[in-house]
Amino acid sequence: MIQIIGELCEFSPRQLTGEEDAAAYIQEELRNSSIDFIVENYRVKIPEVFDAWLEINGKRYESPRIEGCSKVSGEISGKISFEDSTNPSGSLGMFNGVIACNSHCETASQAQWYPIPALAVDPELFTIAQDAFNASGNISGHVNVDVFDHIGQNILVGNTVDPQKIILTHYDCLKKGAFDNASGVAVLMKSIHKVRDKLNSALFAICGNEEICCEPSIYGGMGYRKMMEYHPNLFEGCEEVFVVDSVGVGESKFLTYEDDCQHSYAGFPVGNEYFEQIQTKLKLLIGDLNYLYSVYHSDNDVPENLCLDELKRTVEMICSSL
Image 1: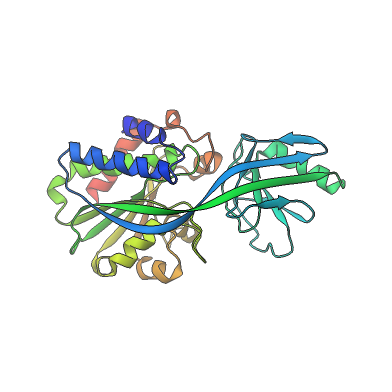
Image 2: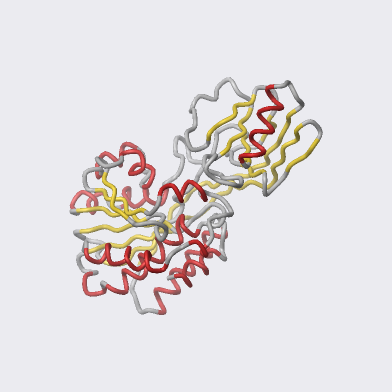
């Protein structure tokens, strides 16, 4: 599993061509193991940041201390919102741009993507920028974003007619993406090997484009949405839906909607219209949330931090649930 995680991280960030390469790798691994699968495609628009910088009182900052985190290009000056990206305000109508920080992470974390020009910065730089702004200093920035048409892929293994259990994960990522979510892919692929005799009653789905897209009124979760759009009868008829995301650090645990509605919804971001249909069936299998926030969508999310024994234990949790 550690090898799978490391090889997936070689394609990072797993967006656009990186996502395509990751999908091809997963399919080749399944073929080499003589595991049958089908691929379902869908169209989606994906933003890609080409350039981002911030200038504070004449000093210019760029990557890795600055990362673009918006779906649009533009200048960041004048009325700037300083945002906690793990708890966004949601009201940006009066602002020209955003400077965002995940205070749990030591480096720039693309924890949130904004509909107006925005930059993610590390905590130290966030304080420097905010202090300068409050002192009427000279602050300006820019982010350059292009939006591309993309073909997303969902990879399905098992019963696509009437599964009792549906187990999903996503293979795309922002930045390095070992914990979020190469770990989930490795665990699902290992689980598929261990429960070959139960594939007639379960459906495994390794999905693309969970992280970010530019579709109207949709933040992310497109691969999961397409699963529900293409297979409403499967989700209606199944007994349980498991979503595996960010495991291998800390003790993995199942979270239901009743346990933690916020993280259950964040782990399966399909929109209210779909989520309400399955929320009573949903179990999110996730590791240490404090660790997740400390590396979330950043270059610090690397394979070396994961624990093989915990990955193995997570596989056993899935297999014993089928």
